[in-house]
Length: 419
Image (cartoon, rainbow, N blue to C red; front, side, top):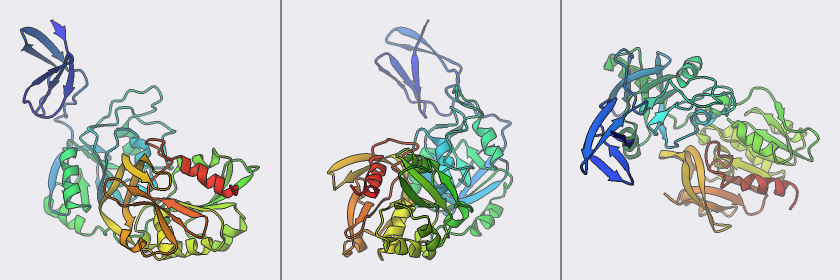
């Protein structure tokens, strides 16, 4: 009897034959061996760790959305309760970098890919010193893993970081629902089983719109990155900066000093940097008047200034261009963006729930649009016409993700070099 390769999907509807590969579509059926006959040949399909059977002893967990959507799954990670704004990421890899991205602070994250955790956890795929998501939703959250660099399992990692998770959820269906209904608050619990109690707890969760979170995740102490003898110095204002942004700057021959979110402009100037970097971060940029004022004052220096994500929104606000809460945001590794200056397209990594108002920017005499999202025409990049300042909505450090946009760090360095 001959073995055949298999591809697994959702409902038992049929068997596909193409290039000697069979696709069996399952309805949550766990099979160890399955014998089929096709074109007068007999095949033995052997399922080995490809479709995880959910344990009957695994504790139940519940997910309740603000619109009343109520789902039951199984507990993973810490046993407890987590609340926050629900959002989703469509990336197939890079889950540890995503979980530790400070921009996700205050959010409950759906990982759309069907298997998360299958290559484990390590000590270097980190964007900050701890997990920043509030909770995790998955289809199959894997406790077993295979990777020679891995130092532990996803389950242990989530427990260590006190993160409540739920698995066994049809994430593709849930993501489709969020795309239609929009971002909203939710609650996950593996300890509260009564729906009314979950509803009462969910009612107390504040909306992301109007929430200032950057100062919560920002460093509390000034620290340095890179070679102190480097020819260029960059002052980074930390509103939730990712580690690989700092690495991307340091690798280009800059000496970096990272400052807390509410640092005074005088302290930033005292460092006498060649350029300023305004970082990514969580929350509503319009709820950060202190940061908007900082950017306004730094622009008066006429030194190169580069902003990413939240920093992009703050540059717009500093030029009196408002921001807005998006329907469900952009989060993933494959968002197409067009650079209108170079007339080129790039695939980008994104993570944001707020955007720059596209109508207001048309009336600005100070700002021009440099990048647009090819999916929805949202503003992805701007620059000032009369100052050396620019920003992008996406993440050019791209960890995880494609490296199409890393040239932006080179352009910032060249700007500081006066080229």
